[in-house]
Length: 363
Image (cartoon, rainbow, N blue to C red; front, side, top):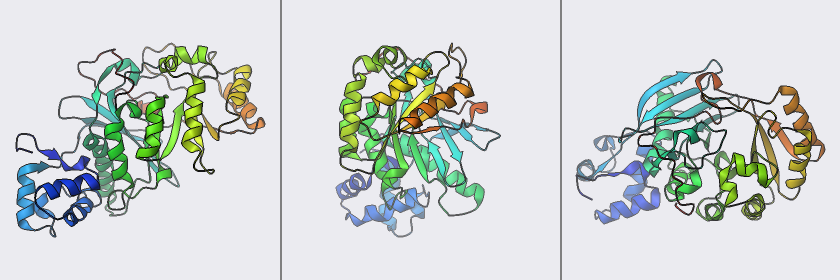
């Protein structure tokens, strides 16, 4: 690795970091020293890593970097939700959202610049697609939020307890980079999160969903939004390639090894589109063979959309039908909509945007 193309150590999981230092002629334990400096302590200056030796610190300073996305803007909602627009080195910008709650603090992170899936009700889809994020750019969002919040609180205690891949992009179309990022989040020398506290949300990229379990079997959320293929084809065009039956079969495979696990199905409530009592009954029937939890998400509007949010009465009625059928169903509390940080509202800044669909097997 030359000085012209330094590696960003923030994106190397522990195995990769061990290989990197071994290639420098160092012993593998050096990676175990460097890793917590980067992630737990938030140190980006190699010279400040006091236990790695001056010679190694000097070599790292010449051959590697620790580059964090730069904050372009910050937006704070009255409910405490905070959105950061983070600028990347190439001029693109992504959005990352921090959601504080009484018992947990969740960070919603992005995996792509824009999105190629073109879901009808999502602001990100309207931005088009530019590129995948690197593992360093994915982890960089967590690093930025965690250490900024710690500094504000003047406390070394960990702030972020949950990470959800529900920001910009389809994570399973970038599994090559999302995988190492998850490993870093789970690593006890990294962010120390448990698998159940890291959630990957997908629109249903079935082959990559099968691979995800082998890479890192974290919690799974599926953007369903319709109880039948005809409607889902319109709302989530990926359904034309991987229809509901194939998707649900993949979901059953994903949780088959752990009887305690459920798949969370996300269902945006769109007035007059997918919120009828008949559709609630159809959804209950559809999910009867899947260990499922249904998150009903009141639609969050964005400029230019023709969709409207279902009424509270319609959402309650829909939820009650699911509950009566024996499903676990909750209505998600809308957070951050005043700063366009709510589910489906993230847009960022996508340069050289395109409507092209990336290869479904790309990861």
